[in-house]
Image (cartoon, rainbow, N blue to C red; front, side, top):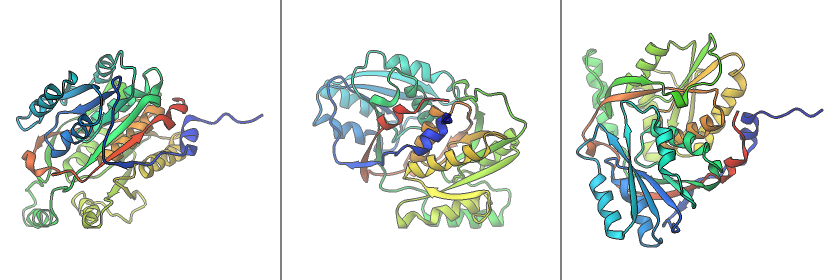
Length: 348
């Protein structure tokens, strides 16, 4: 008698699509673009790349609360009004994100075409919540595509980080405010909770970042039995210094057995590694995954959690952000990632 393969085994064996570099998005009248009103330059990139070559598609705009004055909501509204695009808005409360998935699905009721999820300006937790919700729609991922605008510049600069590290060494009480500071709360939203009985042993899978308070908060509040650190490796040589700098900021040894270095851009590396961890440890440990890495690593976490609902997602929501112009700048390239290949893998 042949053994029935588990969902994680089927997902591991799946030939996963790569990101496709494109110059334009072309939507049909029944299609829907979902985008987020953040404050980075790339907020409008996918929308503007679509309006000149697409028929009257629909747009769902996710607006953040608490609202930041720098958010580009007004510009999104102006483009939609100018082009005669049907637009609806839905609020995402960073401080209380529970239940967003259900509200999101209600916004998509009646959409008969493709759903394009623009993750360029989304928070990592929002990316995961959106993907888990989309997987639960009728047809699942069969009519879903990820849209992504790669930024031209990713602050902080190497000099800023070096200066901050030197200052921290001379003043141990100082804090590193490179991108965000402090943690409002370690979020555990019900729709991303584990469906299995909690194990006595937990493994935290974390993506160290330029905000060391995030990892500290996760460790202190969750008290994991073991930790696995996924260190992001940027795709471009001029940004490769970031991997070692982030490890140093978080006081993690890159050579330790608990650390692995994985591409920030190729989501398949992160997804395959998460599946490997699950296969090796899920019978004895409960996996807690915190998606604080890159946007495409968050996509991997979202796809992983959409299939494996016995994995717990946890997220340290930042309390304070630096000025909006200290985040990514410009738009380098546009990418598309059709998700229909994942529709054949059942949840488990």
